[in-house]
Image 1: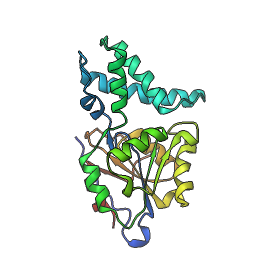
Image 2 (image 1 turned 45 degrees about the horizontal axis):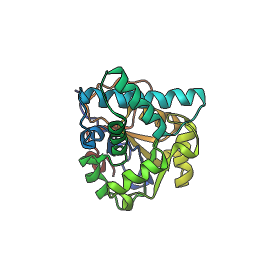
Image 3 (image 1 turned 45 degrees about the vertical axis):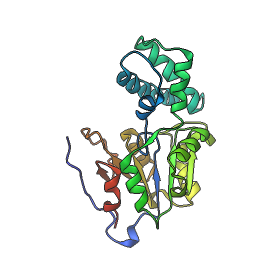
Length: 234
């Protein structure tokens, strides 16, 4: 378990970020709530399925980005689910798999995310996500988060995935701000590092207490939950 670092890089109002950009899945939305809430009566280790499904989902985005063969996040999520069920030898019907996929449209919002979002009134907020537009629209509406976000940005318009710099550039383009005036927040360390490489100020939400090893792309600060984020800003 690491100690939460509280490095205050913004010590006055001049250095206050002018916008905050959040990752969606794993940061705002709990991806592991998908299986819990699906109601699909599937036999097997569902925790293992949830973990493997998420890992393969991300691996497929990286692979397709490297191959420059874009398929949207919904299709890759389907492929990751089928592969995970097969690898774990979990018997599941097409109807059960469909239930799991439909549950991806209505993930739970992390409680700490709800607390943080409710405290930001003066700053414009946005989402920058691998999710397809329809997935993000459904998740945001289900979580009653529409009023919080000025922009909900999908990689779909760029035809590739994080951590491509072309994806992170969507945030600066939409907010019409330079990267160093935007705070990027993600629970995924690889995403935080990609955003840092692009030039954003970065907060890593380390909910799991994972050990942090510096790779010269350190986040500007680390929080254990998004509820701590407002206290990090001046």
